[in-house]
Length: 307
Image (cartoon, rainbow, N blue to C red):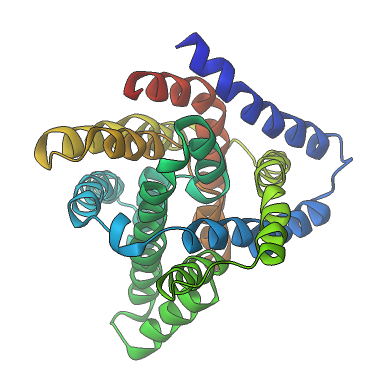
């Protein structure tokens, strides 16, 4: 466990440096926003394209794996939603809280960290999790919030969801990468080196951006935020472990990657959704802050256990 902790510590140390830079205003919120855009649209997209272009979708596409992750995530999603509704929260707030309970920082933290810690074979399983989170649960929260406000489902909601998916650079880069892989064309050496250099900026850039963005987060609504952090860091990986290891009998290595990915802290894009729709942004902000701080220990423990 100590060895794993020491391996994960540098990742969280970079987050800490970013947090310090944001707190002392050396890195302003505007600078953080531009760094996040650079990582999101360029560095991380280059990394994901390069990874997926060197993989075969047919080889990594595992419906049992997807079903195991989806079942466990949907279960925790329903639990968190039910708790919110029992507290007489609106459907909109329940949907946002459910996102906090199951959507981890797979893109910015999981892809670079898990691939380095668990080996390059983790790329495929992590990408499948990222796809389920973005395509299904990312769409579901928009449908629930918009549908709740309109009082009905409409084609406009589906258009909003579809547009959001098409404009998401992580989805686009993965799809384009697999399309390149399917063409069986080798990546030209200059292009591969370009993607490698640009993608290399994803890991430090993403981690620093996470820390700098945390500096602007507030820690209000501590009781609810603590419950949501518990759901994300404990309930979600526990449900995924039961699902992957016993209910669906996923390959042990793939199951270990799935459990480790489920243990990641609340994703920053949940806050972006909450802020965009004006639904409990301070609650989400506190959940991200608490879960990220606690995950320094819990992620190490879980990766050590599954390893």
